[in-house]
Image (cartoon, rainbow, N blue to C red):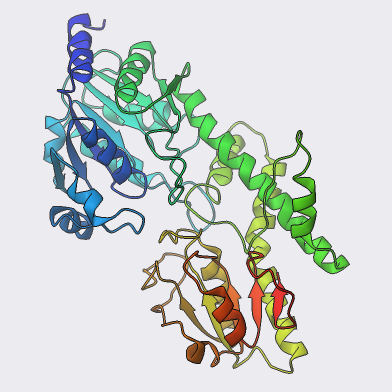
Length: 437
């Protein structure tokens, strides 16, 4: 039976901003969330196993391109650490660790599992624990909860557990952690109430749902919706390219309808941590219930194939200029998965580079937000961003615009390049050296 006095004590510490909050995982989701919580007056601990991140934060430096050093310096009541013993000082623990897929596109929950074990070693009575990492429905109840209960404590009595999906859009100037509605669902009602009370103290609007499974599935639906619609316009792009019809102009025309249509745009493939991952999480759990999500899996296959289409267009364009792909010098513009940020997770640029190099091309890249390509599980590359200038550009047989960063001088690039493969419809002028792909 729940001790109401303990629950009321935790709720009072939240509303009075005396609760101590720990955020585990200080990436694109965890760090902005921690900054907001600190800004609202809570004492915070930031946990990460990456010692480089901890060193940066201790020196008041940022490692995320759209977060300035000045913003890091503005954080007060904050201790960055990789020592999980400080979890025992926290009243609220928020988990924002990665949830990638394996090479066979199955969920990799190792970060959640290991984090759960770290919390277990430092758990105390009357803590609220919230999972924000994107995952398939039932993970909080069936994976995380048993770990946290394995020392004899009971969820809903000795500690409280909820799920609240992250809704971060790095680089978006209109929406941020504070003004995006927060979904919250607890294992039981008290967990929901405590989580809602906490998030309401730092975020403008909180929407409470009836269970962790509803909250988990909300995130799945949001990103699968996007993945399916991106696949639709990508498939149309391939068809309309063969027909000589401009998909971009078709979308602009369709946008004039004031109801029943939402524009999605084709590209070189999908990227980021959520959209390329979430549909596979959903299809994985579906199989446990003896169901195959054919529509969702088909969308994944279409989006995964887009880098191949870009490479095919590049090879054809070079052939028409009597240049072989084997030995051709190609420059990739942008390897981040979206413009004006440095997040390169699941970026289609890496598959494009791999495919081109397998055909014998010599490939370099420029990205002001990604100075060095980091080590990756799927791709083995050792490249650094080259300087971009008219003289440099003229050395390449072809440029492929993968990520349309705002800082690029597109007029200079257009004048200097022998051939441009434009995957983002960025170059508006009609020119024989610009190929839309």
